[in-house]
Image (cartoon, rainbow, N blue to C red; front, side, top):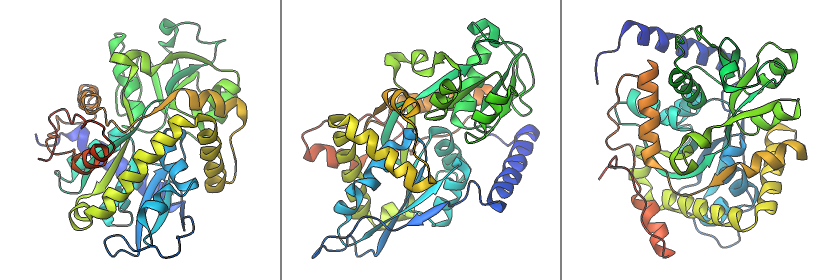
Length: 367
């Protein structure tokens, strides 16, 4: 990988300071670490482990983890090995937890997965499966922004500098012919990095004109009077792009493949249950959100948000490669070497047992 340039060194320092700031106030760090569903009588430990620590975000795009937790699907597959959960608010903090060994497996977006892999020089994580596609929208104040062309000159929020939606918006803005400095966010459009928890208030107060955000934040803005100007899915072939991956610590994968396989088997089973029981799954995800955050989503937010997400075991690897190219073009990432970022061996084993075909790793597999 090329030597890091001065702007990228500045970005690294800024990101580190931001992470420390978030961790210092308890935000973006491990928000919860709670026991899982009851362990069945007579169950045996998997790989001799007392527990497997699973991380995810309180976003509907992490619905597989939310539902799998709520319905006890992970615990069932792990037997007497306790499924323990940690809820995160930011990608860097989850990657840090993975690298430090605080969690073993995590649900996470493509940009943090790419960054985590590249920064560790391919030594600390592997993407072992997919989880979700879609669920990202550009929502605007219809009084201020009436067309895509009107976005020029406006203030648009994204969740975090260099995160998945930030990269997607910068790439889209570039395709419109607009210039934006990726670090400051200033240019033909002003990019305001605003946490998803804060963005609805900023939108209601008029301090931003719109936001490129995942669900359920997008539907929260619509409930505040916003209008969906663009669904990111419309920009992708077949309207599919990875929004959530499953990652694992490489050391954990090497030492405890049976435990990783059990979690993947639970993930595949959870996705199958979600797609077969969409209403029950939506309710279960909301119940888990309420348990994690203390507040459930209202129906006018939950229903449209859930409908915009497709839950899939396919990691949609070719779209991860494209997202990395977008980050490079935006100036947020040196051209990465992603060879080996995927290891779908155990996922393909789980799928084969169900008579399903192996999935494509876009030539980026570890084998």
